[in-house]
Length: 388
Image (cartoon, rainbow, N blue to C red; front, side):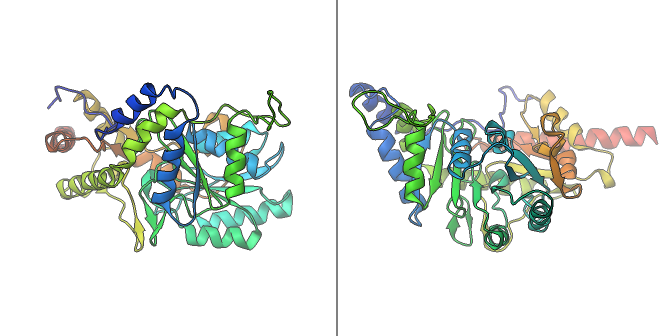
């Protein structure tokens, strides 16, 4: 059953007040990478996250990770430990600075960094090379990583943690907001995220000096002088006042967006519960996921159906879906990097699918997705009978 209008994976969802802030920026001529909306948006983030967290609003989440690496002193030849199952933006900034990523496998309870393999990697690198400079842990699809175990290992070896919460604004770990659990935290406001500023991100920390330094570096590292003087290399990474205006409007509906995304997950799980081949990741005790994307594992052992059968079937029906992230250690660009783990992340990629998850999906659209999934199961079953 083809959808008349394409059902997308995750699209921007405006709350209604964004235009007022943008119009105010135009009316006051604050069309610049600085301005009152930028300051106010950072204040909104800090108020929401609490825990004495400071925020620097930037042009992207990637920029935030890059600045985090700079603040932690990553130099050419340094090794940085990174979760393998993630978007490439988690790892690319390591290479920007001449560093070497060391990739860690996932565990099955959250699909995030496996603490056991993390410690194996640290011990190995200390023995054979030198202590890694930092750890980049990711909250995949909004599900918090095992931050208690990861932080304990990081503290044991005195290695700072960069918490990639690009997909996890609104998620929490034992009552603490994701983004506030590491030495530095990262958010993304890309168009497909839980809230958006069109493009954009933020760097977070309880260390106000780090955030002050990040803002300095993000505005071309201009020294305090009447002329343009630079003692350090800087970057054009600051968020614009207009984008921040969008962000101010989006912050007003953040809790509602989390509620809507979680509703999508509950709808899919209930509607597809009859399919034994489908596995939905539950929340461990004390974990709260924003369910940015609803993800499912498709086990072909009881049926000949595969992840690709479902994805291609949805594609024919004009419905957008995508495989889980392909692990970084399997990417051609990182083929020479060290990897610690087994095949957990590779198996997740092989059988995992992201379903349409936008907070603006209608009940009718959700039902259409479910109906097409069930139709694909029926089609495969009939083919199987014919072959027999």
